Length: 426
Image (cartoon, rainbow, N blue to C red; front, side):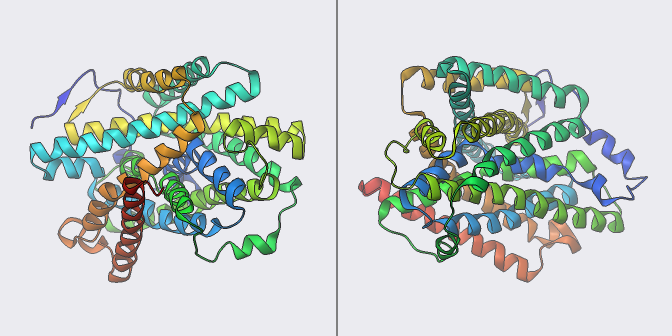
């Protein structure tokens, strides 16, 4: 299929990357950034809903899920970034080049559903934050979140990827402060928290929650996006020595960004387990916020709301960026980011207007994301292990074994979730 562009977005730093390869940066710090954009997907409002639900409902039981999911995420995001750096192609582009048209359309449809579920969760989370902080109606809050995300996306479209990375990093710092602050004044049972590292479940509802937590941590759209982010930031056609340096920087970038994101996720669960466990009304984010205010004071409640708002704004911008990458790679069609933002905002605002429980919508959206992970993960592992595609930079046998083990674990949990959902046990 020929490449069809509908008012293609302005060029980003991808074109500049080829120029920068002639003058490699001397400091590792200058090479960091793409993973922090991808890491926003790991601290979005869906994480808040899933982690608070887990902590408030089951205490420290599911700490191990977050730790395991974060370790998986480090492997997955590194492979995605490596694929983009070595091949000069994003994962959706490689899939689009190799799949026949009918399969490509079906693949795009499932990826687009995943992206829509992501965007739904992020807009809803931002709207809840605005309701918590300012008492705004949810539909109005969702609309405002969409409008602000347009401003953030315009930075990427007009100024390039690097300024966009700095904005997202700033929002990530606000998110971390918002969700870590309460932990410092709560009475965490650290012995029980360590006990939560032992893998176990307590009934089928905990399996559904675990799938939601996994779907909120290892997110399909972040897998698709990271390969494009790394390629656009650093360019392509690198000399082997330069490519090795970039891959080393990428490993540091991924580990650093996801340690921050993982710490925030665990902090959310620990905060809920220590302050909300057994408290009535904490099955919604609004109820959890009220309980946090009652237990820890209004200041912590405000900081929590600010963290949630930053999470919604940053993650919905990154999610829209990912959706554009998916469409361009699989359909060979580009539409302006701001137009896509406007189109994808509609379902979230409509849902918020119906009165459907927004926290339940968040948790269910994360379970849907968990089902979509294998469709991104299986080709990622296959491509990064292919010596014909990556040459000497293909995965070593040990990394391939780990990557397939991660894939098997995720697929296995999804199968269990599907069975429980179909049978009504979940």
